[in-house]
Amino acid sequence: MFERYYTLLRREVAGYGSLLDVGCGFHSPVRRFRDAVPVRVGIDGFRPAIEASRAAGIHTDYVEADVRSLRQHFPPRSFDVVLASDLIEHLTKEDGLALLAAMEQIARHKVIVFTPNGFVPQTAYQSNELQEHLSGWEPGEMRLLGYRVVGVNGWKPIFGERAQIRWRPKWVGRLAAALSRPIIYRRPELAFQILCVKTVGPADL
Image 1: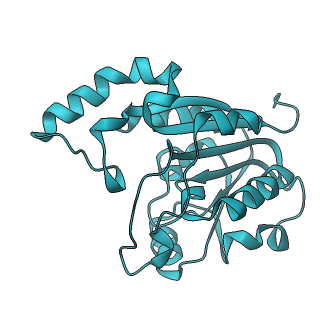
Image 2: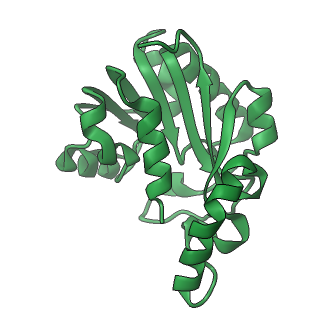
């Protein structure tokens, strides 16, 4: 059910030489397109996530650090693409805005953000307090920040905490999510999640 998101994300990063995956976590979506970007660096503040990602060979290098200290670890314009997938909702609004500014400074070409549409409650899990949701981000505010926004993965009422399907039986929810994708793609206000892309430098490779 999430193939559409991975397809869109791969399209945005394909052909670039380097990518910084901010808040890479255990199972970054980067694992689906490792062949598309030669240099892939993951940064995360949760050691078990770093270790699991390294064991899976998702990235070419790792930094264990608080993502809020991004500028301390990476100089300006040091990566072609900077990605934050399922991250900014785990920060306060103030910290999230500061992180976006840091990502935009570090990126040479693109900043990509994937996040729920609006605030979606989520508590900590996997012994990781960083998994709690502290903020919500909506299409309108991301557009005001200069991002192109599309809706992904399906109609918002279908999903609940941790993107679990709320509808029963689940196959009905999966079908409804798939059928709703063409609509929510152009109307991200209706989507459960949004993909936001900002060009910060020359787009040509």
